[in-house]
Image 1 (cartoon, rainbow, N blue to C red):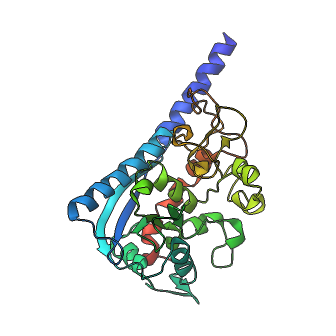
Image 2: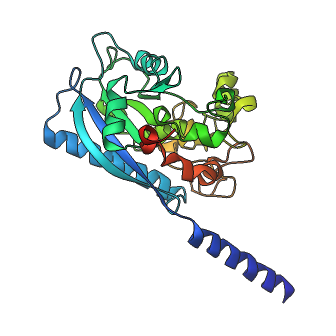
Length: 297
């Protein structure tokens, strides 16, 4: 009877916590580059709808639907790139031209303008980089927030996560990239402070994929298994980096409490160092303040 009462109490606590969670709605601006793309209005609408639907599917499927929701702010066109630009260069261009410089906040580049005008928390630039057909890179975020970026201006992780520029990302317009249902969630995950994870660091012998000393929190990475058996798998943040086939990529964020991954959806989805769901839940209230970046500071 005591065990039953304890279990029932824990169940009530879980239900109450879920009920008390406030859904944070993030406004998404999708901007098609006028220099490198020439989609029709219908094509832009279809791509945009897929992006929003895929984002919500990834977060809902990770048990995050009561914490994060994505809604469209604007689907528009504007000039983002010029001849010769790669995704890496676009990332660099926005990194060295932040909206806040020298204590002065200003619109400096195209996606800053879109973010300000439409109070967008997430700004997605759709471009065909100069190497769009041959590059293995399908997307990139301008920044991955981490504790090495804490300064007098941004003294806490919370203040870092509210920074407007960190909501900006780019996607390769190649069909084989945009058709990946987890692509946008992966890049949004980076803007949330998530890294690829321990399994990717080990697989590639490169610990920049999980820089333990500067993470915004323990667990800020993906989870996966590679090179161990025919049942290898990976979560959203590891998806591109473990040499896995598409069928072995789970459209879920890492979660140390969930046994819903792998070939038969019964394998653990995370561990202590790979618990992206907890990181997102803990910081959800900050991510949707990026759209108001130009109205406060």
